[in-house]
Length: 312
Image 1 (tube, one colour):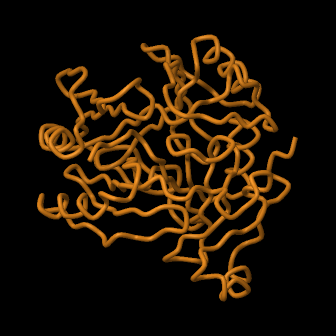
Image 2 (image 1 turned 60 degrees about the vertical axis):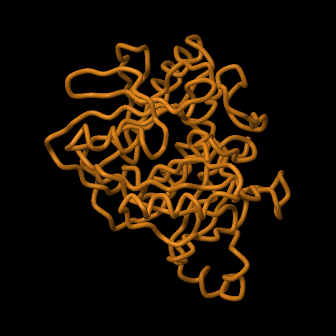
């Protein structure tokens, strides 16, 4: 039952217009699904990614306007980094972000570190980018420089040994590099994209809020093994959700030792299963069991900032 890298990252935003404009205009991500949290249908759930929202390229957001800003620390994912195709692309992004009034810092590994307008810590690093990627040709970013998907995450914990041992034994992460208070881990498979996780030990406790990651979703491919994964996590003493039949995929959730929430998600049917590829993200999509409540749901949702979407 291999883990095939990152499926998606889900984070929290408070401002729809700022979020949509930054991810579609500045980063050139396509809004592939405009939907709601199934368990909280008065709340938007936005999915950004490549042209089709391929697993491994997706960054998703819950719109929670009344949540406090996040605080970096233990029990939190403190940075999410995108993969760029090469060093020339990273340099191009450095200039583009500066043009958009986004301050960047070059880190020792050559990565750009910066903060999105809604407070989310992000990065861009050159990578071999071995992930299936569909370029959004109608977007604002030339293909030579376009972000290829999620490269890695940095996750703070209080007990480094406990978390590292669990990630290795349960998900198959292997230690790639180790310092006194930080371990870099890599899932087996080809390339670094979506497989790298840096785990520093941190004394201060983080706070999940606006601008922070809500959960890391790992990709388990088909749905044949999701019940087996649930039993495996339960046998390790974790509190695991039932299998959740999402409109686009199936998944389970569990909070691992160290306090970070993980999701295991199948590839599922994809965003274009019942929506024309050319109109992805253009209107509100709902799972079938919520369709009869569409009018009620739309009345409770805030107006969507249509003028913030990139339309060429």
